[in-house]
Image (cartoon, rainbow, N blue to C red; front, side, top):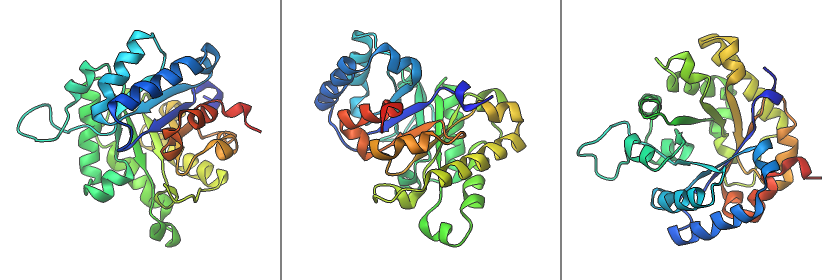
Length: 261
């Protein structure tokens, strides 16, 4: 399978930004701006805060939009005394398609490990959500020459005991931590090299057929000005966008990456 057969994904992660009223205005802007050709070419995904998901769902359902959306995190538990956590069954009732798992900020600020990421991947699959698994290295790991080994270990840990039929459907987002919100960006070749390594790792763990189906995104200071060069890489199938996705006009320009100069 070539990258032409893997539909590109442009995923906007709002992080802890945009309240539920602002989210309605944002989604209405997207509804008025996106056309059928955009949806045919690219899968557009929004990761709003939990408090915004219902508002996003309302606009998507009311206008019959082809935008998909996901949760920025998911509990490893189905229910119970887990204050502040959100279960997969709750998310599924909101027609959530994706669960973003293992983002670097969750790993850094909430001490998430490969084991907890793996548990959340399994929870997402259990509730028919598609995991979007974030992996990547910090600057010190990269400078130490261990970026590939570290990232591939995260991939392996996240996929432990996950069956191949689920793996072929999930998405892996490579986010070099040193390039998130810093203005620094890995070169397109850096993104391609790590995507090749990730795909090879999935092939080793499962099969080449499974690896060819997995969509691999790049995340880290993505904007309209650099998205085209990133997307020209044959193993990069889209982007996980943070700050630039908070501006719907900028996000639209990213979604329409082939039109960039």
